[in-house]
Image (cartoon, rainbow, N blue to C red; front, side):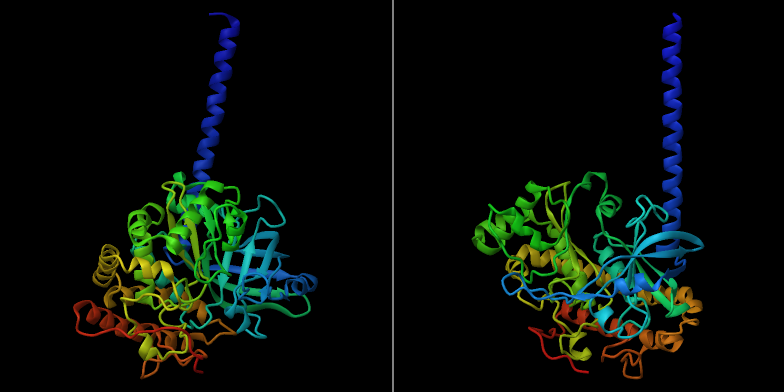
Length: 464
């Protein structure tokens, strides 16, 4: 063997060693990251977050009103939030010059002058590559109208039980320092919600879904077909990832065309090729049981759409569940909402749902998911056990809450007053346990034919 061959072999072996070590380090880092987030989302570790911003950054974060466009789609939300630099300390780890902004609509507006507003943190916004246990974005919900801080977590678990991958939900105890305004103010407990982005799709759906089209519609009420030729018009559906995915956008337009113009025969033949019927049935079933009206079925927001690269079918994914358990009322009483008709799981005009429910095969599929949830997941023993575990995890942090309703508010949000109403929030809604008990009775009675559900159509003025 020549000297050159020996040298080449040594170089190749050395290269393999370096690759092996690099792969090993990457695997160890990924395992460490997964262990941490499992402790937050599955083991109920409440993380500690301190936000520190100077006055200039805080002032820059305040929203600027945006005008409605008379010639374009309706803009339903009047706040536009911008990022500013802030130092964020999470469980003792300092992240300098991270991006910080407000988030939300009602949850922001109804916070009023309170400092306990919903936040979004982007560690990567101003310092590229800065991450916290492999993640760059954190969503902090102030649990608007949920004094128990549990509706997001319980709600996502019900959607997940239908087979839909859902964001992890945990809690954070948050303090705030703003130069000249407050110093280490304890804002209390927030719900911490996993960010839905392109990396989320890979984590939840697998590597074959990498590069899928992800949309978050906000300004389109019932879905509308905009034609085949000008695909740019479909940006109105809030494309988050995949502006360059022309084939997937075209696939989406084909679905919309089928919904709007397809004959009955064509719809029945083609809908299963363009829409993931299993996901849609699961989404509607969980939405119905949870009376989640602040969603696709009632309002034109709080959901994601994904053209999955794996099979090129549209999937619908839930988002923002703080007003589940009948909290978004559309002017109806809690007594009416808890008896909502399971056989019409939409409130506003939804052509897709209407056409699907004309198909006996889809109605049976949907009813089967409802029946499974009521037998295995939306049952008192299981849900109350989860509530007890959540209560144990967050009680020590609720005790320190200087802004919220404290332990009294949490218990009221879980149990309600003698009539089951949560008196700790500014809306007449049932607390979580009374809602669960009554919804279980109503849905099971509807399934067995003992009672008919309440029909809800359109929106009324919300009683206060």
